[in-house]
Image (cartoon, rainbow, N blue to C red; front, side, top):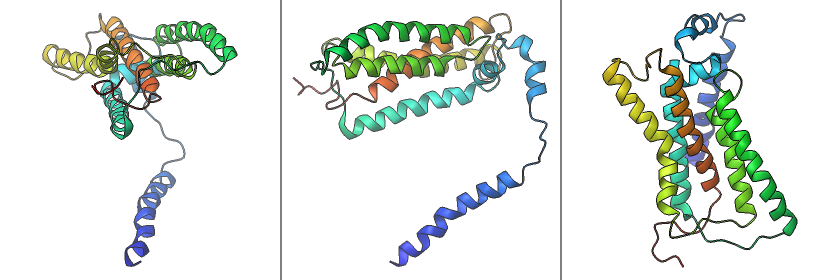
Amino acid sequence: MERNRWLLPLLLTPAMGLGYSVLSLPEHAQGLQHLVADKMEVSGVSNPVTAVLLNFRGYDTLLEMFVLLLALLGVWSLGGLSLRREAASDLVLDTMVRFLVPVLILAAAYLLWVGAHAPGGAFQAGAVLGAAGVLSLLSGWRCHLGLAPLPLRLALAAGPVAFLAMSGCTLLIAGRLLQYPPAQAGILILILETAATVSIGVTLTALFLDKQHPGNKDQT
């Protein structure tokens, strides 16, 4: 009982500090838009959001990729996953999924490609790809158990590994983390976004898998 009395003040203290910080912000902040606009020519893309997420503040996106992966590992630690095919629960659902999944994959590819110059990008494309995966799971689809573990792990690691590799290369070449050569910035960002899209989509799908871990030898 003694400990519970201090629990509420401890929880309210960060909230009060956050509230004070928000209230103390100026009414008309200048922001960083002009700095982003001045550097768009060397960013490799024409969409300012993509330029910030993949170029100017690429390390934030790198950390976000690892947060997603750690969240999935946390879920797996609680119960693992199942790769066995389950019977489709409904013929209408199965037919709808067979129609929608290819459309969602095409939509994800479009969002990935258009992100360089319009709203879109890896996270939007990955979310749509994840929706396609979840719909497939709802219809009873599972990967073949003998083939799934290694490709699944490779897909999950594609985004974080691509970011780490790009970080190391740019650090050695340019002396700064994720600072791309202006002439190659566009293609390098596209490579990163493609790997991130695959990882995000597969991670969101894998969060809905259940039961045993693919490395569990006892699974039948």
